[in-house]
Amino acid sequence: MPMFRIALVSDTHDLLRPEVLDFLQGSDHIVHAGDICGPEVLRVLADMAPLTAVRGNNDRGPWAEDLPEATTVRLAGVALHVVHDLADLVLPGGARVVVTGHSHRPRVEERDGVLYVNPGSAGPRRFKLPISAGELLVDGTTITPRLVTF
Image (cartoon, rainbow, N blue to C red; front, side, top):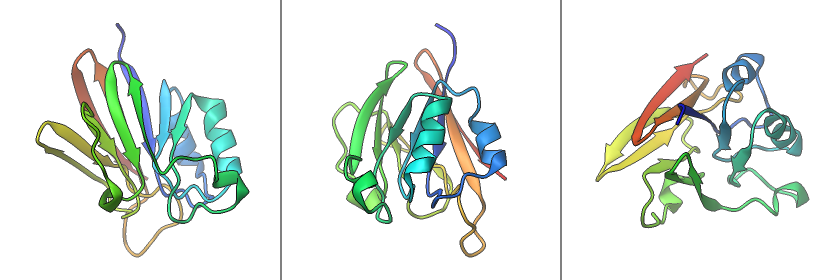
């Protein structure tokens, strides 16, 4: 089975930067961990690769009503749980990866056999936090996370 690339993005706040779009190119799947802030962002990402997205605290209006607050997807044999704010996490059994956003702080941490990844914010700069995104490279049972700053 070839390597499977899952691109991770969060907190775009209705801004899709060209360098972030370049990074997302060639992904097998894209995960957006909320604070999308507009349906056009979802349309652009869904045109690039299959897309999983959750609603963030800033995702309001009719376009956001169908977005789940949390979801679990199985990609390349890996159960990946997505929720915008880590404080709202109810960890489902069997999840190997949790993807969150909200804090705008990129972070990778493993706890109790679960990989927690926050790709940070790919949208407007907030305070002195970096503009960032991430990816998971899945090769069989090996999951390699990577964060990229722009």
